[in-house]
View 1 (spheres, one colour):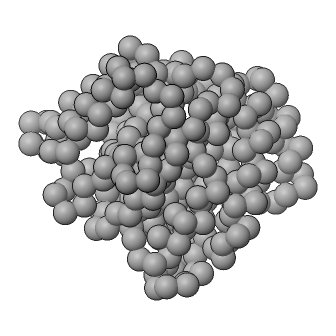
View 2 (cartoon, rainbow, N blue to C red):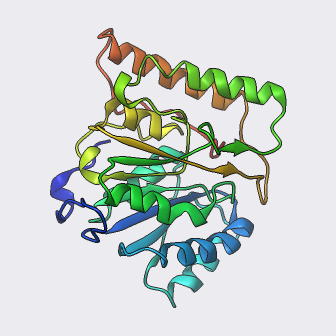
View 3 (tube, one colour):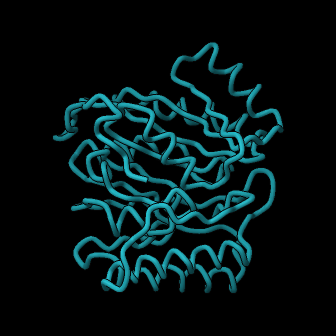
Length: 272
């Protein structure tokens, strides 16, 4: 699913210290997360108001029917920067993100989880990294200063292994320490017309492998505890991640032609 240039109105490139040219679209995918969303939207807007780049926030909900639609609609009536898209009969984190990115003219594209595990207060730091010339800015758990709260040793081991197997796929000069992060900003020009899978859940890894990325900056984050609901990490998530790795390795070593139309059906968001 490429981002097509003819589907948007082109905007100038962002670049240079202190530059405010361009616009940010932040997508927040949701599925049964209305309770945390009530807190998150206030924190996100407060954080983004502290930086100079014009922005809007799109909540993409996969038909949760838990009050998300009514809550976000009530906020949007009073704040034109807040938007809502409810997808009917569709599931999948990557598809939700790509849909939100396609239907805008923003020059900077971003995503974060709705469960309050990503700190919205660091959004201005990520924006600054983009404005000062980086192609992609990542909220990272695995660089100095970053941390993960209350993970058991087995989950830490699995996460470390999942990151380790991505290193051969990444370019040697721009390897990210946290290619599994769901909290990042990227320049639109780096992913425009790049084929990305609409199914799955680790879209950052695909962008790092397939996108036109020349520079990466990682900002340390404290990956917090889930504010509501339960973790969606399970065997299905592991299997989907394995399928993604197989496709990327096959494409990397010329074993098969990448197929952007491969669909992995998921009944819920496989968040971190």
